[in-house]
Amino acid sequence: MQDLNQTMISDDQEVFMTVGFPEGFIWGAATAAHQVEGGNSNSDAWVLEHAVPSIFREPSGDAIDHWNRFEDDVALLAALGLRAYRFSIEWARIEPREGVFSRAAIDHYQRCINACLERGVQPIPTFHHFTAPIWVARDGGLTSAKFPERFARYCEKVARELSGFQYACTINELNLPLFMREKLVAAVNGDLKAAAEAALGSSLDSFFLFSPREAILKQGLKAHALARDAIKAQHPNCQVGATLSIQDEQAESGAEAFRDERNAQFYDECLDALKNDDFIGVQTYTRLIARKDGSATGAEGAPRTMIGWEDYPQALANTCRYVFERTGAPIVITENGWAGLDDTRRSEFIREALQGVHHAIQDGVDVRGYLYWTLFDNYEWMSGYEPKFGLIGVDRNTQARKIKPSALVLGDIAQNNSLVAPDIVPTPTRNFSPDQESSPVGIG
Image (cartoon, rainbow, N blue to C red):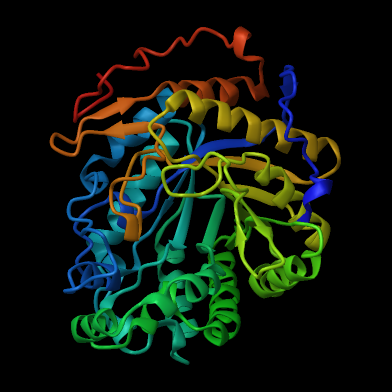
């Protein structure tokens, strides 16, 4: 989001110092229903996963069985020292048929909220995390003129029935379809589109991730605004916002105009529409360098994460600065993470990203929380189960959870509300070791 030679946070490693974050800073981790719960068979994504051929590498199946294990999973999060849990409420479970709401599903999510509150964890529900009921998709999904009101009705019902949350996200990564259209739709061949249409009863465009630009900027933003108002009507003191996928857009010399075009295309219109919300959720993973040849990728030869992105933790502070300078809105970092098997590097990535965030806060950027993506290794959409973002590993044969050392690193930062030097990290006092497996029914 700046010239390549004017990076806001130095690429050089800085000496870590003990630095405190603002009082009340939110520390936690995030998940999404479809990626962890399992068995989300009434959703559009489930149908597309089982299409032949499919854009998905593999079906989600039972995922990590979070639907049945949420109490133990929340207990794990709390035991780590984290005090916030961002999870999503699955629309396809709540309203499996239009106008028919599932009491069992609503009660389930209230139990999820209660499990958080009982353990001193702040629940942060997201009302839409990519997936929707099949009936919504078959009627055009986000492209339907009915979508905003349908989504708002669902949000109003859920907000009226559920209690106990002080923060909420309406739509996850509202702008992500702008990227997906650019990167994937053009590459989807006729067989994939035909299979998707046969399975879902509509075109691939009805799936949220593939909605056209005009639907995002008209229908998506309207849906967010109506949902925000519906939630706040039931919970006037709740802080409500949407989250955006915002990567650190940089430029090589001579490509500054292209970088600015990318900012305008992918971020600015959404940011301008959201600037008066209670907060903006920032979700950053990497940087993209605009080049004179019209490409935008990570630095050549730089280390990559398991998902193919450049390993560049400095991106997070840069995007927070960009968002705040454009909007002046409070920021909650609702996702940031590192995918790979080297958990030592994951710990370093977290520290380096937070060091930059702390500098941004010192410079006046209003950042109010950090939610790591993700609490568990889980189902990463088209990439399947291979990418490993989690603070906690999962044996998918037994569903046993395994704490990674990075979870303790973030937990200690959270408990101290400070980024402390690696050699003076307090000895964990929790009742498990970093390499200990938890039982399927507890933390062991």
